[in-house]
Length: 203
Image (cartoon, rainbow, N blue to C red; front, side, top):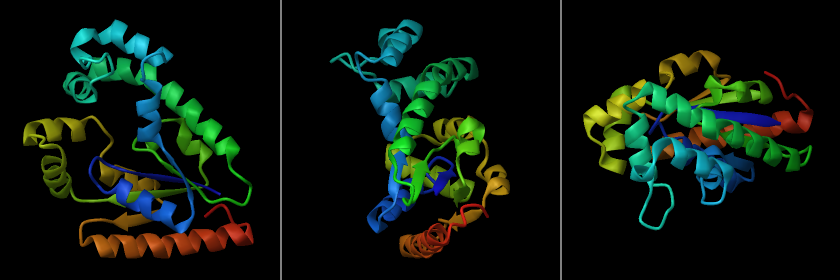
C-alpha cells in the first residue's frame, strides 16, 4: 500500500512521518531526496547554478538552501524554474524507492507538494496533516526565525492546506498537543496496517 502524506509548511508532516517510521512503515522523504538531487556533481546542481548563479552557493560550493528559498519564494517565475529543474528528478527518485518496496509493505511518501503534481496518482490513499495558518506562521517563526512577511510569502507559494483537505482520505489535526497528534498517527497507522493485511488498498 502506498500512502501519500502531505500538508502545508510547518503543519507537522515530519512529526507524523517520523512516528509512522518508528511504527514500521517504509517512509520516503521527498525533502531528503530534494537535498540529494542538488548535491555537487548531480545534474540539478549545475542547472541551478547556471540559472541562479553564485549568490545561492555556500563558501564550500554546495547549494545554500536558505538563500535559494529567499530568492524563489518572492518570485513566482523563479520558483517555477527551480521546480522545473528539481521536481522531475525528485519524482524519479521517489518512484525508484517505491519500486524497491516489498508488496506487503506500508509505504508512506512524505511529499509537501503531493497534490500539485503527478505523484498524487501514484498513491492509494492520502493523509493531510492540518494546522491553522496562524499556527503555521508561529511555528515557522520559531523553527526558522522566519519573519511574518517571509512566512506569508512561503504559504502563498503553495496550495492552501484548507484546499488540500478536499483531497484527503484521512486528516491529522496538528493544532493541539504533540501527544494528541501522535496518538492520531498511531491510530491511523493501525487502520492502514489492517487494511494492508486484508488487501483493501483503496478507500
